[in-house]
Image: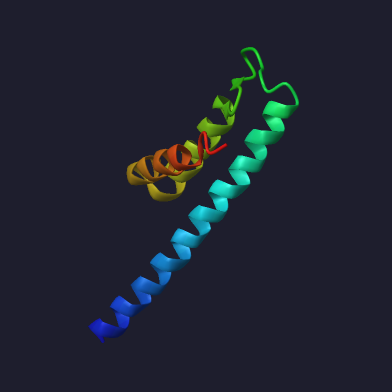
Length: 86
């Protein structure tokens, strides 16, 4: 039972890692597009180059709402992994 459950966790972790890598790739596409189209917005748009602060705040709130305080930490890690990949 425990061995099967651990294998399931290992499988899930593999899928999660794949999804994070996919998220990073999609984020890089968005960053390239934003930069090629001028990429800089003045407040209150919250968009500076590769980073869109208002969008990041939405993501943080979504993860916090779904997973509580640890969700915020997870979202911050995902955002860090996805930033500046180009």
